[in-house]
Amino acid sequence: SQKIEQNSEALNIQEGKTATLTCNYTNYSPAYLQWYRQDPGRGPVFLLLIRENEKEKRKERLKVTFDTTLKQSLFHITASQPADSATYLCALEGSGNTPLVFGKGTRLSVIA
Amino acid sequence: NAGVTQTPKFRILKIGQSMTLQCTQDMNHNYMYWYRQDPGMGLKLIYYSVGAGITDKGEVPNGYNVSRSTTEDFPLRLELAAPSQTSVYFCASTGQGLGEKLFFGSGTQLSVL
Image (cartoon, rainbow over all chains, first blue to last red; front, side):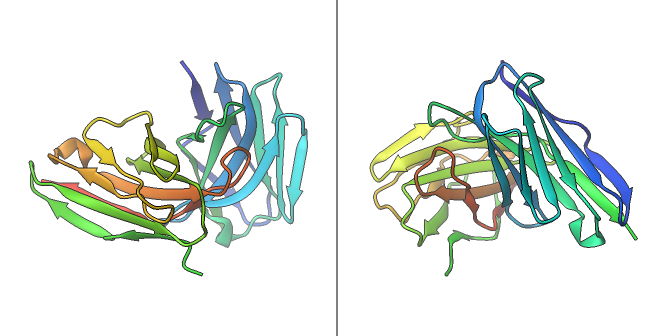
């Protein structure tokens, strides 16, 4: 069956360091991969989308990579700040216009 | 610009009661979705709609019903509430579906006791 795994439930890093979150998938051929941020008590907010034929996407301090051979996406936050503390969700979308399927998320804590 | 609006924000139901979770969007989006989120379990799709008059089941549809009579509204109905339906429910929408970001509402926290 299709499976999406985000590397860990929680990740703690020091302010100023680069946070790297991992999203792995099996039995899936996504056309798109998206990353969302979710703060406590709120709905997810879209951050970045990367297509299957793209290797990397950047937006300000955020960078996403997509390796369809390894079936993995990495999400990087450079120069992390306490305000980056949140849960980050990856989501996959197939080519047949099927709805997004979400991973369980990784809770990131940036410590000052 | 309101985006996706969900009501109510919180609700407590007794086992066997019924209720409707409301969702409306003002972005003229064709695609709308209902997800539930349990602690540590991520978002699971309940139902979705690709346009007015069209709905389809997601991963966990049992115990729920939906309708889509207008582009703006996508209510979720719980007919006989069960403790297993205690969760946070999120409604989301997007314009054309494939390759587009979702806009989420702020969620409804439902407890069934």
